[in-house]
Image (cartoon, rainbow, N blue to C red; front, side, top):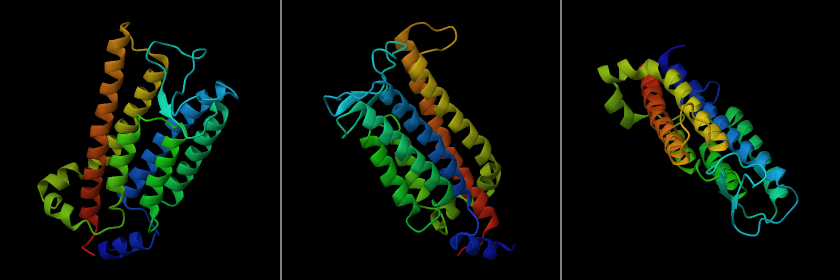
Length: 227
């Protein structure tokens, strides 16, 4: 397929551009965190939340000092909050895989994550899904501004990096998520240090999300003609 035909096919939704592929993977990754929050909320049972701010992991399931996985919810019941968080997370997975490249795909992606946040899906993911949404708005677009930056040698050098960077970013997010639950870091016992390590890993993941999209744009710019 010629570059111009390739770009037109992307606009018509027959194939995914790289930004759409990255968004699909990240949507699934972040939705896993929502399922994780929902699971622990359901374990707290059919009881009132008592406030807008909640702890996803209750005292009976708490595994370490900072492992409460704070969240917010507009549903005043732990069981219903957990079910809602899991349900919205599953919808996000379906949308991210099948519909992200539609005309309003990124907007719906954003609204679904806002909904997830409001039904107990966590708050730590907010900066992640906002960053992802901002890049996702470029799906199927001609990337004229990015072409001025990435059309030269720099773009050619980083264009193959997106898949490796994406894999590493997703891994960092999952590792950070699991540390937040179990509080386990080999060789480290101080809870405050573990918390800093957890947030440090998540920050590295956020950086590599940016790298993934930028290299993904470079990858597509190398293949497609200006539309």
